[in-house]
Structure formats: C-alpha cells, structure tokens
Length: 307
Image (cartoon, rainbow, N blue to C red; front, side, top):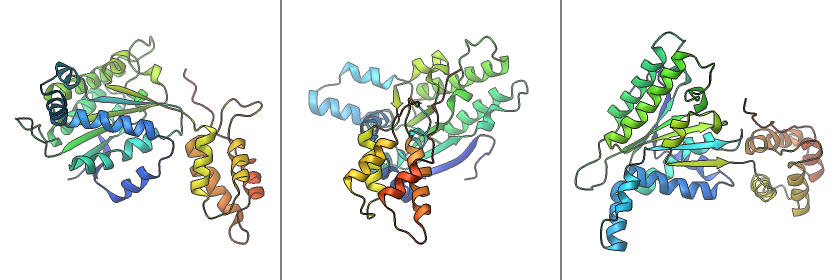
C-alpha cells in the first residue's frame, strides 16, 4: 500500500530481519527494553493481561481495568544520540515475534506540521490519525488475540507537541497540539491494538496534557564507563586490544576537565569506531595507541540545551 508522504515518512512491517539485527545491536538499554516490552505487550494485547489475572489470581482484577484505560502513549525522552530513535524503530520486531503478530510502524513526517496555512497542521495531523485507525485491525470480541497491531512513531515530538503554555506560540501550533491530543484520545477510546511512541530531547517542552497521557516515560542517558567498555569490546573484537587499552579508551570518552559530558552512543558507533578503522585502513592494524590518538581528535556531541 502506498504511503502518503505528507503524513508518513515510511510505513514498515515487522517482523523484519534487518530490524531484528539492529535491535540486537543496541547496547546498554536492557532495562528499558524489558520494561518497554511489558508496556507495549499489555497495551497491544489486553487479552494477555486478562489471562494472567485469571491464571495467577483466579479472578478478574480491578487493576486490569486501570491498565486498559490508559492512553496508548509512551514517551522516550533524553539526550541526543542515546538510542531513542533506534529503539523506537526496532522494538516492534521482537514484539511482533513474541506475540506472533504482524505490526506496522507508521513514521509520522515532520511535514505534518504544514506550511503555516490556517487549519493545515490540524488537518494533516487529524488525517494521519484517521489513516492509522483505518489501517489498524480492531480488537476482537471475547478477549481473543488481535490479528495485527500498529505503532505510530513521532520523532522530534516537541516540534508537534510543544507546550501550549508558551506565550509566543502561534494559534495554528496550538490547534495542531489540540489535534494531536484528540488523536491520542480517539485511539484510546477506539480500543485498537495501537501504540504511539514519541521521542524528544526536551521532555519539559512537551505540552503538559501530552505528558499526563503517557502510560510510561523512559529516560535515556549517555553511556556509563561500564557501557562504554562493553560497546568498545564488542565492536573492536578481533583487534586484540587488551583490557587495559579498552579501559583507557573508554575512560577517555567520558567526562573530562573542562567538559562535563561524555560521548553518546552514536558518537561512539557512528563517528569514533569508523574513524579508528579508517585510520588503520589499508596498511596498519588497529592498536591501542592508534585508537587513543583518533579519540583525541573527536569531540562528543554537546547536550541539547532546553530553551
């Protein structure tokens, strides 16, 4: 089915082998991944909650109804380059495999903000949610397993869901936020196997009404020394760097004098390690000395500063 480029950048279908590999390559997000899996599974498969309640307590727990009434919204918040978008793009693969369901991921386009024309942003956002509802299978009666599920990914969510409390906010942007909130509420009221994931570098910039609706908020941070060592050990396996050399390199990537922040995951995987490989290619081998020399030439991405 063709994608409306005014509404969605892409529509992806899971399970997907490429996404399976990308998900497996994520490092340092084990707790987030485990918690996210439970949140997503119970939002998309309420029948599993009912089964758990009957199996372990012999009855329908009232607490189940509270979980079912939550809006299907999860927020990924945190610093730049910490894995928010990568997890958002890939988590549906293990979920689809575990639940034995086909899941479609709709990546909302920033073009949904429109050009500023009166009513355009509201119309585009409303149309995106309408198309999502139309593509998402209905939950079957009788507590049975759904036939499929859908995820709406809103990256850089503060661009669409900025707080309406800002005095300088344009009327059209306020109307767009209202449309976004209505879309989330409509999904909840329709009881569809659908989930909305918002990614933002500025949680405080999101509208309070959006934050209140979140079933869960996950906080993403830069990697600790332990995680930096693991990432370097995994990615530089076969180079025969010693543990001492890996530790020295990992330590260099952390906070330092005059810099109160370290390297992000993407700084390490997309900039540093490729730079180390290219510094050795094609005539040298990777050594601890070479790796440290390369690291000294790269500056980590500064933290995103909220306005």
